[in-house]
Length: 176
Image 1 (cartoon, rainbow, N blue to C red):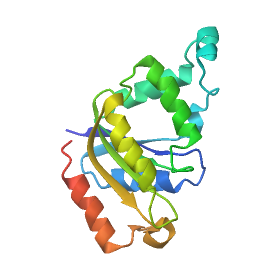
Image 2 (cartoon, rainbow, N blue to C red):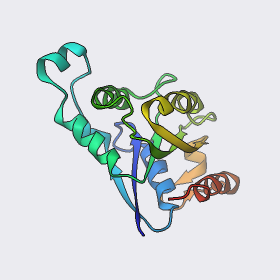
Image 3 (cartoon, one colour):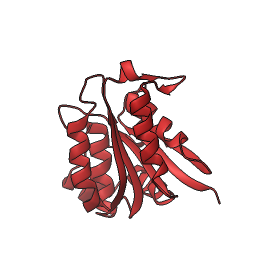
Image 4 (cartoon, rainbow, N blue to C red):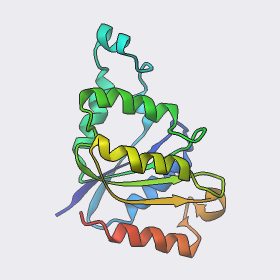
């Protein structure tokens, strides 16, 4: 039976390296349909309680929440902005958590990160590993790809054999 994967990069960059990594990782699963989300399709006003009380929760937040609800597995790769989530992702996170504090809806989740630097977004990955379970993510694995430009090619995926093997081991351990 075909399973559904929702994949996205937690960045609003049109050329997001994290989106590329998420799509690549999702492609490693067999018998799965992958739907790729673009955070730019969920641009909303900056969250505030005043805006929520005045206008309610934006329809785009509900749409994002509903998309996550259709997944058997969520694959997301986090961009690291100043050691934390990107503003685009954090805003969606904030609005969606107003629908349900456990907005990941107890879905299996694979969290990734990458950056051009040698740490590969490890700081934001650690934040997510500690925070997301409180938001209903069932974290099945995590992976950081360091030095994206040295270790990834858009037509090949991960080019470093050790890193490719590490990610493959993680994806093969997740039962859909």
